[in-house]
Image (cartoon, rainbow, N blue to C red; front, top):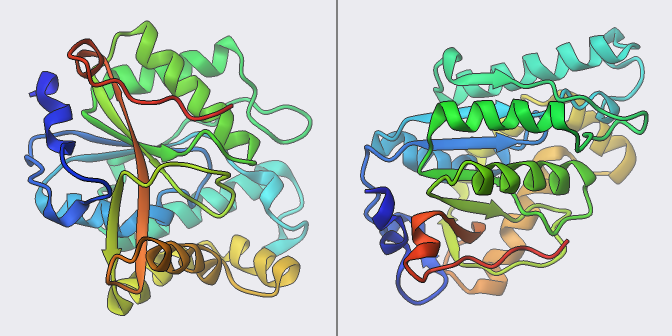
Length: 263
């Protein structure tokens, strides 16, 4: 099955996720740089969950720098990390993900609050990915203004090459993505958008920060990106999650290489 992964994604682009035949035995991993990155692609992940695919999620960092000082009494990094991790647990429970499928890697961060690209962090990402042996990995696109998104992608890519993993990466568009191909889309309507908003609003630390700094909520920030690119792609739905596909391992050996996102 792993050697034939690229066959799932043949056809004119963008492919529509709901029209693909995804075998339920394919294992799915989500490498989320922050608590809440899982929720940004929740409609696609729900499709896989309902399809019977096992989904395992690793949140790379605590994201303390994304919490306003004093929010719900949190003034230390440890308190802010605990708050954000509980928000992620709450959203995953609402999604229906078993508690044991969610782990927090707590990668080391620099004084700027961003993930360090060092051997310790690489080994943590490597150990988790090797243990999961996923067929599909979801994570934010590497061509992004967010340093944690870029560095998480770099740690993931190094692992796939050093461990010679065979998998397909689904690199998702988010509000800070600079540019990417739209290889795969999941169109969805208002009912799914309302459900997704409920997950996003579990992250009240991010919702309040967006209200204070941007004048709109966290749910609107994510769904506005989904709405804008649904219109650009003319997919016939009000919203769409979008992904660039990158193949690793046997798919490359069989002449189906993915393109590396720009640094």
